[in-house]
Image (cartoon, rainbow, N blue to C red; front, side, top):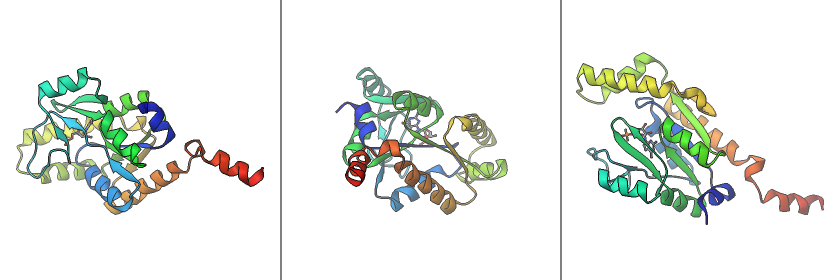
Amino acid sequence: MEIAAAIQRRGLLFVLSSPSGAGKSTIAQMLLSTDDGIAMSVSATTRPMRPGETDGVDYHFVTDAGFDRMVAGGEFLEWAHVFGHRYGTLKREVMKVIEGGRDVLLDIDWQGTQQLKQVDPDIVRVFILPPSTEELERRLRHRGTDSEEVIARRMDRAASEISHWAEYDYVLINNDAEKCRELVHNILKAERLKATRRVFLHDFVRGLIG
Ligand code: 5GP
């Protein structure tokens, strides 16, 4: 099946973006464990694997040359440079989830979201903001023993990602991970009920009113 047709007929593309440090990964994991109807698209990346990560689960870790081949082969729905590495959403990952009858959760940045919107105007875009600059900085520091320079660079990147907040359909402030998860889940549930996504209703309603 052609990818655009497959997306339109069944699954929803549900995008979560945020600066790192806003709690997006936690919320994504909580959402996946509370809703069986949505699964993650595993992206490809050229960035090195971090301790605790698994190839094929967190990302498909590829070399620069491998990434080039995937781009040339038309394997991506979107891809972008993020923090000096390349990241991309694979068509086959999205198809796998959609063909399994589920919606697709995409943890991608603002550049990928813009590209995806061109491929499928029906995507749902959610942006998560940190509660404050102080809290964002605390979370970025909390991650390890990085130098002030590294922290400052992370804050700059966060500011640049945040500057795209208004391009999203929904914007949440993450004061509390569980509350934020619940709101994200509410958005997902409401989006699933949109009349335009429920093509089968035409037959159902015809049966009701003749
Ligand atoms: P990290 O290296 O910390 O896992 O991710 C860095 C950033 O890359 C995150 O903001 C994440 O949303 C973004 N990212 C991850 N996968 C993709 C992708 O497939 N496409 C795009 N455009 N961004 C991605």
